[in-house]
Length: 194
Image (tube, rainbow, N blue to C red):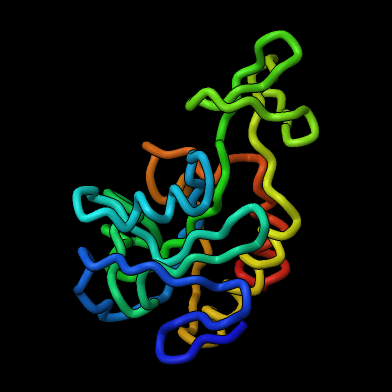
């Protein structure tokens, strides 16, 4: 993959038009990682593009490593909301939003696992943590997603001089995504973000 004139090019990249966002970013120095908590990459991407929603993102990365670019990287997306990081507020003004297709936290019913929207997931797609003496279950991310997000972040860092890689949960107490199933520490170390 490569970035040319603020667009990502590669054989697994598809483009959707998010016409509600038109303001140019004055600067970009941060990448914010999100989890979609949605049914799938394409449905999440289409939702983020809808003119009647107050959210958007630059790219959505699917479980099969497919990438949907919704906005050029120099256009402001509405993904961070009320946010704070490194002494700044309103991170939409300086960041690129990457959404990772993932169902988020799962509920266990017997030996079955369900998302908040009712889809069942097999045990091999479940990441379990212990929290306060009880188990919590999360939809795992795929190796393909991790590989693609690493490549996209590496390209963004080189192209825009990105200084910060953060999770949505790092910039607001209102959010928990992308959640503990995403190997954020490993990604940050591999990309040499500190």
